[in-house]
Length: 159
Image (spheres, rainbow, N blue to C red):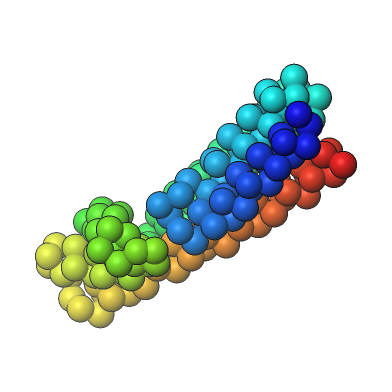
């Protein structure tokens, strides 16, 4: 059962890594779920309750940083509230129409369009869109490092 639990965690971990750049998959959250499932399968001998809580805390941290990176990136480049909403809506539309990476351009164009509709000049709107893109990319990088940290924490406990 332990070997199967390890395989389950590794599969969840690899899908989690893919989920960092494929936003259809909740990457880091899947890794935390994989740790919980693997722990449960082994009666919490593979990962203790403390281990699972640490991994879940890292996953929550990743989600928080991802959200803040998008907001701070857009705000740092001068986006208004309309630009922030446009970025989110554009990212969702981009993801649906141009998967898997359409969310990046969707965030950019959504912020630009929303800023233009709010009456801002093209230069300001484009700057806000670049901020949304930079923030989104920053969130991806942060999630990547956090999922690597989860791996560094989890894999030695399995072997």
